Amino acid sequence: MTSTLRKLPRLNSPTLHQLPNGLTIIAEQMPVEAVNLNLWIKVGSAVESDAINGMAHFLEHMIFKGTERLASGEFERRIEERGAVTNAATSQDYTHYYITTAPKDFAELAPLQIDVVTNASIPDNAFERERLVVLEEIRRSEDNPQRRTFRRAMETAFDELPYRRAVLGPESVIAELKPQQMRDFHTSWYQPQSITAVAVGNLPVEELIATVAEGFTKATKTPHFPLPTRHSPLNPESPFTEIVRREFVDESLQQARLVMLWRVPGIVQLDRTYGLDVLAGILGHGRTSRLVRDLREERGLVSSISVSNMSNHLQGTFYISAKCAVENLGEVEDAIAQHIRTVQTELVTESEIARVRRRVANRFIFGNETPSDRSGLYGYYQSLVGDLEPAFNYPDHIQSQDATDLMQAAKEYLSPDAYGVVVVKP
Image 1: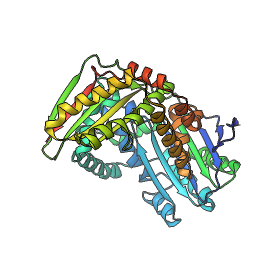
Image 2: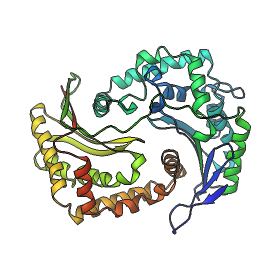
Image 3: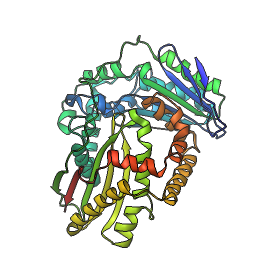
Image 4: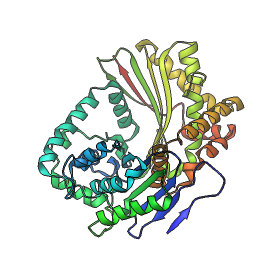
């Protein structure tokens, strides 16, 4: 079944095609001399039990170690000799693999990428070698003060949900994983019904779909079966009812770090995330945003401050992070809480909302310029929301947020008296 998603004249008009085995293909011709194939697998560290935390990321490394048809290193060699590029990334909620090729090379290289992702052989000796690489990546991550602070913040943000854990997993778990556990994990989760294949670039849509469909038909040997269920059903956690404070000492730092966070709706409640996105812009994006102007430009209390509304699938975090001198920590936290109080009690000005709207609209247009931009956008929304519409309508949703909506979102989700806070002192 194929449908073209067209309602209004707009930048994008991808075609959605579903194979009988459950695989979703999205294709769009774009007049840029490249083609990007992005394979989104709806599996990340959030599906892991604590006993295999880090498996999804470790598997991402092992995908490139060969299949029955392709020896280890052969995929990269063939990609590189055509001047194409490949990469991959693992998150809490998804893993994706992509290649960008010249249009003339797409029919030859796309099936190779499909083969390595669906038929990874995960040989024992390569597994042991790659384990050392992953352990080194974990150590490097632990050596990074910014990542350490973020990890502590996530452990504070969530008590139960898997988002509290690092995607890379702990060294102790990675050290014990067995190749067969990974083969089972790959067989269980890397199935057509959890994959969205997005092809965008300068070839006819029919040709893009046919190349991808044929690649998967040849690559998929085993009949698919129901996807595994999670170890326990997951529900969003309740908002904080008080200030939950955790303090650390990190001697590698020059300045203190302050993180304040709130539990907010995730992508499963997408319509509730837009107001928080706008509030993040008003509070912390750009020099004229409230926190930057007040705390950095005018009062000089912080050297940097940023705000983001981070949306995981099930639940997000509204995240404010600042660097400042130790003696300013209390004043900075109080000032941020006061700014939160203000957006709950006073309507945001029209000019502030207009600034965020312009910024979002521009970033959306700039973020749609290359085949890889678009395939990333389509893959993300189709994988996590099961719908492409938000990929086109994001600016419209932001445009529709008015001052009353923003006040309501602040009242509902951001309390100045109940939040998580992580302080790291040098």
